[in-house]
Length: 386
Length: 125
Image (cartoon, rainbow over all chains, first blue to last red; front, top):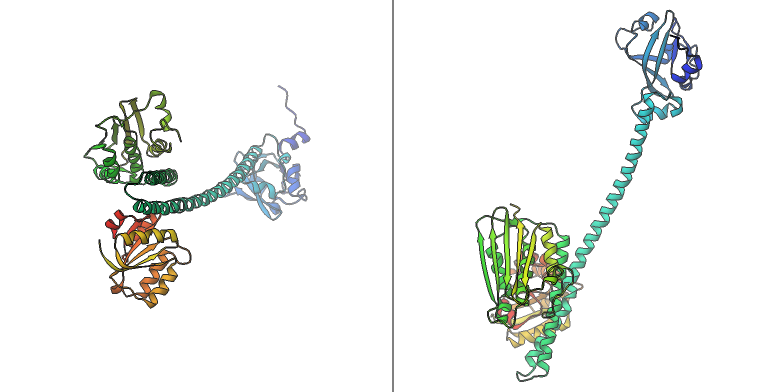
């Protein structure tokens, strides 16, 4: 076997931070990189530049003492450029000298920068290089994430502002858009009051004007419902379905009476139920008034039949009518925004779209079954948030 | 329906004043009706012509210069509670925030969504 010969240049390349101490512990030789840190290193006393951090106990600045710690990890601390740094390595004990083989112990990027070192000052096999690269990547990704955090918080502020503006907008829609309609409706009431009971020209026109205003008001309230659903956080409160359905019945009683439609309802609630009352009301109100709007005027026994069954997991709601029904090809489309399947009523095409959107917020599902001319049934399931 | 001595209509919208006055007159709600297009005008009037519990104020919410809320505050400071008239708020919108504010205010005894109609007069006044 041939001895492997390592010349000085190769040694310097392999260990750019090596130190050779003679018997008086003078530094007699050293790697280029350590000399970069201490330009006056050669022939200076080791103890003027370094101290032992490890081994900590029992080591003295004497050749024999140092030699006795061969085969242990050495950590020596130096002081340069106003900065403490550490070298980690081991010693090779020769008869009249010791060789320290090691390199800077890097735990932080600043360790590297403050010593004025470059990556090329390290041997390629040195794990310090990997460490450095990791630290630099980390620093870059931290800088990146700082930038994205800043972007995120700026976006959040923008969103918050947009939300507040939307709140004001909704308030002004609900008020300013409606106020002139309310004035008009009042004026129309006066007109109807002043026009003779026998009049057949002006009175129908006034009624049509009232109907137009009502339609516009409905549209505004639908837009408000939509915006409320899109914007407001989900609320959770105890729902008494009998109470809720009776409220709706009271709100719609005038319409049910004038349309001569029977409003049947049955509630079976033994378990308590937690959900968002406003949203539930929007859903029920839309489905029930649809049943009313799309009644079959040719039938004498028109009805809307609501049945509600609550258990501790969910509520099952069915809204059934014997109205005009929805053809198979229209059954998917009726949930689309602004889609209207019929001209029989002057709906806005928003009602079922809103129902779908609101249900999505409540994690609910809806199923429609219908036959043209027979009526339709909407079946809903909404989870109980109890 | 209660019969009042005097009704004060406070609304910046003159059309609404016209409509409301018509409805109140038709329903014979009061012996006299006076109207103001701002809360300030109404306050001026009150300083020379006091009101009492036999009177009614119909108060709009959204008004420039002094809105319905501000008018109520001023009224509370300047009039003894024993001589407070009945106060009903009028609004074009069913705004929940307004509604909850007024339902907590014990000066206010009702809230009517415009327009005023014979049915609403019968129900709330």
